[in-house]
Amino acid sequence: MLTTGLVLGIGIVTPVAQADDEPPTGPPLHSVKYTVFSETPFRNAEIYYHAVDPPNFAEYSHDPYVFTPNAEADLGPNQQWTMDVLLANPDDWAMVTVTSLDSPKRPNFHCVLAVDGKVVVANQGPVGALCSIRNY
View (cartoon, rainbow, N blue to C red):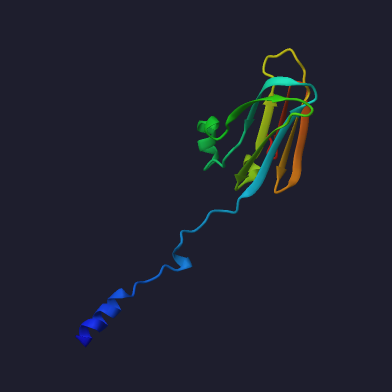
């Protein structure tokens, strides 16, 4: 009976996973904030932005809209559109653009792109604006 008790006691011991058993993580993610507004009120501005890092340029090139969502927003001097995303490579992929499409109005759009709390690009244009670290 003593032997059985020892065997049962040993059988209860189970290995505990160590932190080393966790899967490796990817590169650190950067906080990217996109901000868009206009100097005069404008309804349904078209906004495109990069929401995630593509695995490579070929994948992005094949179907860019998978990685670049579209939003429509009413904008004005006191009405901003903002989006916060996390990107591993903002130097390659951080981008926001806004346009009035074929509207005859000239709302003078502004865009601002900040990475980890620091504004890195700001731009403006009468019918559209592009903010990107990388040249397109």
